[in-house]
Length: 488
Image (cartoon, rainbow, N blue to C red; front, side):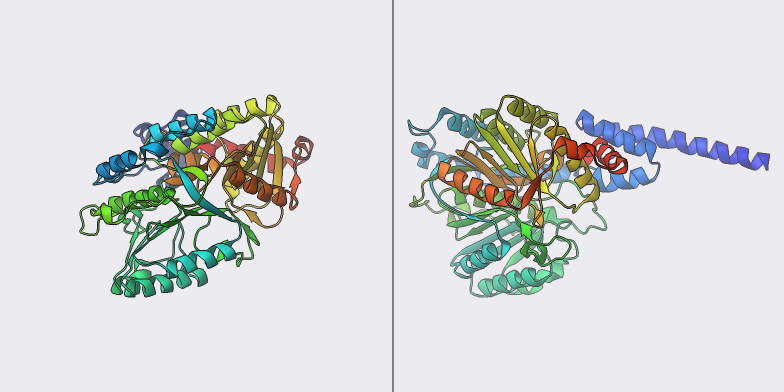
């Protein structure tokens, strides 16, 4: 019996030692920021075997080949188009005299980091209800004459997903060029055969970067989280909604789904379509499906009657710049009166925390609205931890009670705003491919703030005292989840 226990002890010691060595080799063989490195070392060390399973899903970076495909596609047959557009709209690239210096500095930031075009004469329509959004989107798609480009993180095989597919099949049969790009993980359960009839009718559909299946490529990170629709190069959509019944409040778990999306007409649609083409060409690299005849997709942009200046900005793991996060920081640091934010996931890094702290302690009215219910347990507990931390620093924290808050909006002083796919968390800043609109129009910012105030009516403020009264077990889960925040 003694011998048996000695053998077991030796085996356990060997397992622990092997696990420690494997953990060190696994974590340090890939370059990543120090917070994520320590978080993964903690997981792999304290949870042998299971930690490595978690790493397989959450920790592995995309292959170098995939990153090279995205980076090379950025320049593929588009450099000339970019230069042509800059020359053609040279008068639009500089702000008018009355444009605030703050706006221009933000515009310059995105031009330098992302080649983001600044256009003035855009029409912007805000949707915060899924039924109204998809009713208008489907109407626009049904009226398409030349092209329909769609890119979503999630397109489910459910009622709304099938409705979209049917419309696209009809348009493809009419001769309209239809392309659909979707993320295999976000659209899990949807097989490539879901789009067979669309292909038979002349349309195209593909998983982002041509992932074979989640069985062979089960990385949860580095996903295509963008939401892009362009129609005839004239109408565009960008925001937080995906395509699925839950986004139309048809799933009891979430209840009413509160999100924000934009319908755009004007020169800014050029930027949306260009981003889609880059992603499409990266996915279709080495095939005859790439879009090389870009001039057909970028006809001379007619100046619309709109008055909204804006930029479309994208970011992703193919670059280390974290462009959208830097844009958020630029807006927050420029605030003089108030900062209002809506986000389903509040897991900011140190730079974002410091910026919010500085604003709050400078007397700026900082408000953040998050959901009252989780859709991802660890993520929600981490969100609660950071909400408690920021509440202690003078930030007003709202829990949205009327369903699930999924909007990703930032509003500054009633003058500038951002709406898009990026949450206020590590995943959006570092791990996923995102796209946001940055708007320099007090009229649109005011509309977004009115929506925020309407949401306040369906929310309650969570004070530091209320956080302090939480059960110890809940506070432990929040603290433990916070330790994993760089990898959630």
